[in-house]
Structure formats: C-alpha cells, structure tokens
Image 1 (cartoon, helix red, strand yellow):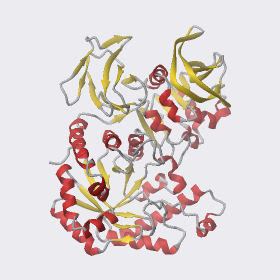
Image 2 (tube, helix red, strand yellow):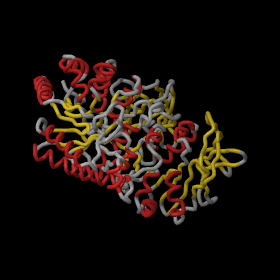
Image 3 (cartoon, one colour):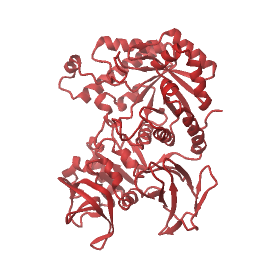
Image 4 (cartoon, helix red, strand yellow):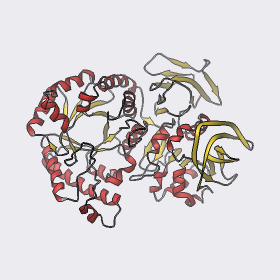
Length: 568
C-alpha cells in the first residue's frame, strides 16, 4: 500500500548500475529496498563522469522495474571523466565539443525515458582559458548564469525534439546562497525546465565542508516551493558523512516541509555501505505518513531572499535552529504582518522603499545586522541606527527594559564576539543587550516608524554562537518575531518549530540531552492534543498556565525526538 502524503524514490547512479549488474545484484538490491520502503519510482542514470550505460543495460533494468509496477525515470550527471569521484569539476560549456557531448547524452536518455532529472552537478566552475576569454569583463556570476541559460535552452530543445512529451527536471543543490556563482539561475531556468527538484542534504552540520544546519533542509524546500507552487517535485538527500541521527533529521526536514516526493541517494551507497539506513528510512516514512495527513500547509515568519542573492551565508538555517519557523519567498512578502530580512535582501534595489511601505501599513520588519551593514546610511530616513566597525566580547546579557535598566540579567556559556550597533537614545529602544566592561551592546533594537516597528537583530561574527545566546535573550527574539504566528517557544536553542495553517505544529529537538521547555499558545487554549497519540496537555493542569491571553504548556523532548500538536 503506497504512502498517502508523499511518494518515495531511489536514485541509481551510473556507477551503482554497473557495479550491481556486474555483481548480479540489481534485482536483489531492489528487493532489499522494497522490503523496507514502498518505492514509487526509480531514477536510472545513463551518464556520469565519463561512464555511459549501454542501451542493453538500461532496458534490462527498466524492464525489470516496470514488471514490479514501479515508475522508472532517467537521470544524467553532467560531469566529465575524472580520476576521482570527488573531483568536483564541471563540463566546460565554453567548449563546443563538450556542449555537443551533453546534447548527445540528453538525446540518448530522452529516447529511453519520458522523464529525466539532472543531478545537481549541472553547474559550471570551469576557469579554463576558453572560459576566461569568453567571460571578458563580466563577473563570474553574470558570465556563468548567462552561459547556463543558453545551455539549458539547448538541451531542452534537444530533449523535446526526441521526445516532445518528456518532463525535464532540474535539481537545485543545497548550497542555495551560492547558486549564481556557479551558473544556477532559478528565475530564468524555471521558465525553461518543465519541473525542478530540491536538494535537502545537510549531513553532519559541523564537520563537513558546507556546515549547513539541520533546519536548512526544511528552509530550502519551502523556498523553492514558494517560487512556483506545484512545480517543485520533491526533495533529495544522501547518506554521505551521516550518522543515524543526522540521516533521520534529513528525512524529517524533507517530510515536515511537505515534499511531494522524497528521493534517497544513492542505491549503491545504501545497498553496500549504509544498509542500516534503509530500515530506518522505512520506519520514518511509515510513522510520518500517518502524521503529515493531519497537518495543513506550512506557515511561518515571512522571510525574503531575492533571486541570485547572497550574504550572511546560510544564516536561515541557524535562525531556524533557534525555533524561528521561517517561510521564505523570492519576492517581497508585502502581505505579511512581520517580515524577516537577512543580508541577502540587499540584492533588491527597492528594499528601502518596500520596508517603508510595510512600516506605514502597520507591519513589523526585522533586519539582521548583516543587512544593516549593507544598507547603513540608506536607513537614515527611517532610523538613526548604524553598523560600526567596533566589536565586543560579551557573556552577560540584559533583557526587557524596566525603568532605566532591565528586568532580567543572564549569562551565556561562552564569550560571544558581536558587532557594536550605534543608535540614538529614545529614538530606538534596546529589547536585549550584551554587557561588557562598563558598556552594553544592542542584541535586539526596536524603532517605531509610522504605524509599524523596525527591529534590528545582532548576529555574532560566528553565527554558530547564536546557539549560545541565553534562553531569555532567544525568548525576546521569538516573542517579537512571532506576532503573526499562533505559537512560539520559550526554550534554549536547537529546538525547532514547524507551523501549519490548520492550528497544528511540530516541535523537534536537535539537542544532545533531554530538554524541558515551554510552548506559548497565542490564545487561551484549553488544551493541546498530541497528533497520532492519546496524550493531552490540559491547561487546567499544573504544567500549563494562562497569562494575559496566552497559554503556557511545559513539555520535554529527548534528543532527536519530536512531538506534533493541535491547538484546541
């Protein structure tokens, strides 16, 4: 019986196929996967890094899978022959010969399948003499995005000429802040390709090269889903550099984001080296399918990331790990009551006017210190707040203004290096500060403009130090940014919150120890019912209190665990 709320797929790359066929293990590998997972589709790769699968081999695999009632699609990885599988070299698209080679691969694959997905090596990082000459005075980002737009148009024409009904899918990689620097340009390419796919890999979030935080897998899926709802076919992740917990979290982030299809990469890896991950995935699919049918459409704090923008690299993942539920958009979300803007918003030349318009409409806008640094004096017509070149190491904090001091003082577990933000007394107010050497430094500033409020959130020099902000500081940030949400958390960092539009939400612990924290429901709720269980958190019991129209529920989570609730 198939899953009701998503489908699943396994990706067999060209190396997998050759090895499994040579070992006589292709059929047994599929039986192993299907024992644990209800597989809806298999992607079979025809080409990768100079390895070209013969028509005989492809038809053998396709026939076997079709006989099992499984949909089969083609796949291509656009990498040249390499001595090492970890040689991250791309085709040279300035070379007419290599462009012809790609069209040959596309035409061959389109003759075998009605759907093709391009692996996320469909980029260019080539800096050969041909590329240097063709680039001329352009930036590498401009040159490469223009070049890949040309190539995308060519291969789409090639595929459609062979198979007019083919569905061509472009998969976008997890490194979303750097897409344009290697030729990816979703704004243009999504008009050329029939569909797209999203890479939700985060792997180990500390010891791998990209240091993508767990929440980033959820964030990027929601970002691409909002670019063109319905055209984003699914999420894809792998097992590289994952322990069981990291792998499970990739699964959960992809599922919680409401991916329509979930692809596991890749068959060889899972059949030979990471076999234990397969039954784990099957368990999570079964468990989550029951849960996700009770949740609505994902919702959250509106966050703006323009096309081809960068700045404060991958900060959204860190913010999500603070319990801020983000719902990102590639267009300015003027409809939202609260808008979060990171440095990437500087890409929009009209951003100041858009901020003013939101504030005049009585809405709230929160800027990170990175965006403040990029805009600085341009904001002077709204508020006298400036990013300076001064730094301070802070360990003590004050939160919530009370008379001329603060209501509460607290400490972090380490010194945190932050930029000093300059502002004018009584034009702006400090909701939270860091304290050091007879001075303090704004962590969260509030400024009133027209009918709205402007906030500035200070990001440490190392964004990972956000996790060391004391719980009381994080609670102030969550409270200010959740005015349009039905719920927020009072918790330490690394507790995730995922909100849906039918009064349901999920909390997940990314922490390494058992953690007790508070769920704050923005109304006098009688109880929280826990989805897919008989547990009920009643507001009349000791662990829940009502104060000023809000209801506070204390709950606990063990490491890696989640709970899902409906507000009753």
